[in-house]
Image (cartoon, rainbow, N blue to C red):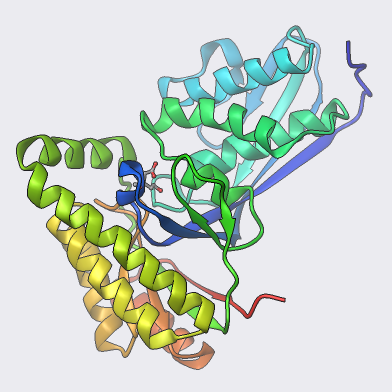
Length: 316
Ligand code: MEV
């Protein structure tokens, strides 16, 4: 049995942004995601004397009484403790998150990942990536039903990734600087429902739906090359094409379209929803930092929405 060191331990996980390929990735197509460290989850663990006590913005109390939406997190904690051969451990677990919930920024994967890392650290366990993934996946299944795995891979990676189901995750070598603006519609999207709505569409009209999903896969391949070459225009065009397919699939909505159109009118090179859609955030590509700041400020002024600016640069 691993010994309890009797100290506090921390696990941190960033959010994530999907550049292109969301939804299609569930159907085996590739997608590109990057970690988004401007928002993050911090989990902190210390010894306790009355079972496992959770402290977070959404819930405070014993793990045995968590609300339904935290059942995946509870299962993930129990399974991690089992793995650590300490199923009876008594712990105080604090979760602090700056990732807004249900906005396509990977909050559920980041919470699970930060928690598992904190538990591993607490018990001094030297984990392998695969072990972390298996435990986070457990929580993701509760949260999303049929997750492709892109979210958990993006929040546990420090580089842009290209992800395709049943394939090894690839790190994407970026050939230049890309400046993104992220804007939040302020509405919570339900990933489970959005993924389900496409499944329903697929069952009703498989040919047309499959065509859109294939098209999204091919857009991701174009995006991959654009990122590798540092070609901003080509990535912007790919993002715009992706948004058209996501609209066809029915996962964009008025609020998202409004932010996308406003970003384009302000000079963005491309803009689309990011994550599952039907609420949540958009991601727009700007020419440079100066333009990104102008777009972010203007969106904030016009829509009173939260915005972030995030850039990725040429890989070493
Ligand atoms: C959610 O961030 C991305 C989706 O493609 C769902 C998934 O891949 O599990 C919509």
